[in-house]
Image 1: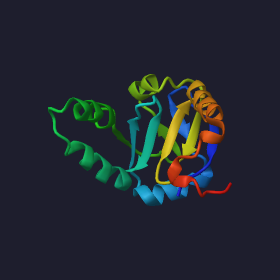
Image 2: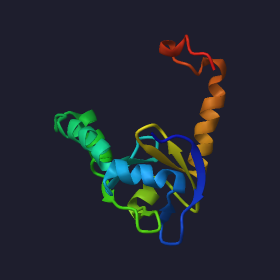
Image 3: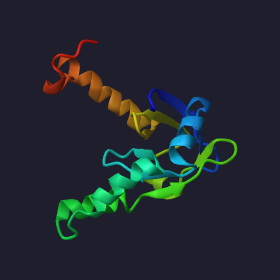
Image 4: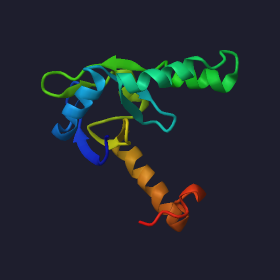
Length: 148
């Protein structure tokens, strides 16, 4: 299970050094194969390949001629790329994905249970502002009994 947010830097080649605390778990969950894809909010999603496969299959099963489905396929499947961590625990983020998510030097890797989100510094700050703007209305009705 992946959780926590980490401020990281991309190197000159566009590689992300996965924090040591996540490397082994990612490697064992992924059997060495990871998938990066785009998210509608202009971040990237990083999945262990076995976790991504059923999501991909469900998206691919959507009707081709339904506009919303076609758009979702183009985004999630069209941008998806299989990648592997190198021996140093780095993951190359392709230029197309870096451009899509507006990733520059500083980025944020945010654990979301079975996957990570990868945000630009500006994108992550914008997400934080959305959270703060919600105030006491942040919790959805289904979590009304949650006590923090």
